[in-house]
Length: 494
Image (cartoon, rainbow, N blue to C red):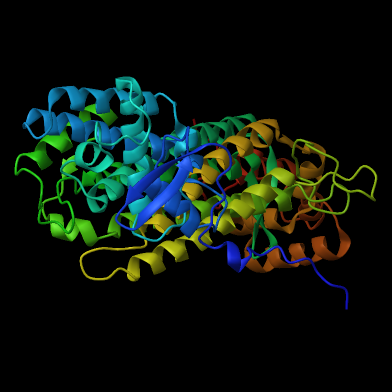
């Protein structure tokens, strides 16, 4: 048997994250460790890099999370200064350093992996260290010279990972939900525009994959737009839920090490900084261990993903062919579809969105299991919850964008094929049942199926109705919307 190269991490390298180039030595309660000399992060981040070499993805892949972390630290510094827990000069330094991170600087220094033990402690310490070392640099001191400015004593004053981390991921999710909301609204607008464009194009509706009654292509696309519009309200409603935070809870919700005035001040400052309706949870012990809002968001994303995937299934089916399939819609040709079949073009955009939906639905299971696994006063698995939800939010946002720009905006219809299918479809016979009865309609349907005849010709040839009357009843406007029904044919109103 041929040997297969082993790409697994060498067990001997676990606990050894290679540091190249000049280093500085930092110390913590576990001992000393070398850190890259020019790094803005410190020993706690370095240990996390050694302990969690798992995903190959750092938290910096989520820019909203990095900005949210900085915003929380900025709000905490302002609150500590306001209540007298931190000198004004130090609070100002933290404030300005956080502002630089919010503006996009130093994001490459947020190195810890998206999956980490410690309930987010590594992420919080990474943030504390980056801000502290930026402040040290401004003061003219060497990075790591924490006797002048300390990551915990100064940057983390009145805080715990257990209140700053969940607050930060909620803020990040709120930002990302807003972005998804805006992109979804544009996708809905595209479907609505197509609904108007194809409002006069009749087609055969289908139930259980069998021919049903006629409708218009515009009605079909309008249905897609409306089912997606229902999701906008769900996303709007989740923002206030994400805005209830436990800042001031510190370790477990008792507020130990924090001034009694701190929580209210922190919420007020964070609301001003983020523009979100931030409020302090009424029960900080409950809020520190509860992950219900994450399950609520995950459920909303799963529902939306399932709806979006169903629409993509329809797009793929209706555009199948183009010769031996449904061939009703023509999706924009985006790339060659085969390395062997010349001229083949595949529905690659809907296919990609389908796959995103599968991942989002799977992530909902992860969030559910992680939420259930919490114990006592803290849920240690919020890192995987944060990663799952932020990834789902980002992927769905980008999916809405590419589906709109690369697919929906360019959809065309095969009018000739649709007209031919409607003209010979037994489904249109349904519109005649109030006038000729079910039995006669069923006989005509059978003849149409066996002989592929025009429905109008069959009705006229049977002597049941005059051609003018049949044509009036089978007008597109009558076939695709409710009409008044009587036994006399001349039905004209308005």
